[in-house]
Amino acid sequence: MTVHLNMLDGHSTQGVRRLADIAWAHSGDKGDSVNLGVVVHNESDYALLLEEVTEARVLAHFSDICHGQVRRYLLPNLNAVNLVITQVLDGGPMRSLRMDPQGKTLGDSLLLMVLADQRGGLLPQRAEQELSQKK
Image 1 (spheres, one colour):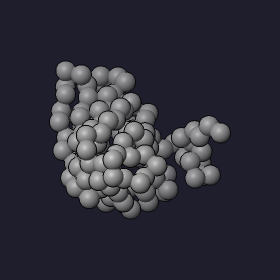
Image 2 (cartoon, rainbow, N blue to C red):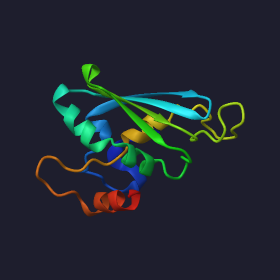
Image 3 (cartoon, rainbow, N blue to C red):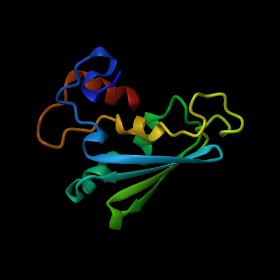
């Protein structure tokens, strides 16, 4: 079964902008840390990426599995950011019993992060609740 962003949790998310709407991500592991590269599709969205994908928001997004910290490195020549998230893989691939011990799905998980609406509209109530719960 294919899961589309507008069908998550059986609820309509129509009108909710997520990071996947403006960027793509790639992830890789190094021990108990994950390295996430996030690149915007359009150069005009780079400022929005910097505003939305902060160390604090990423840490909040992964708060249920991250016991370390998030470091963000700006890559303006690539319209990208590099995120290093520590203590997120339950000891690393050789020790972890998780289904994804290398953190390969964490890039996709980050792309589900709800963005604040930058086009003047109000976020639907469900998105506002998600944002407040992640703080």
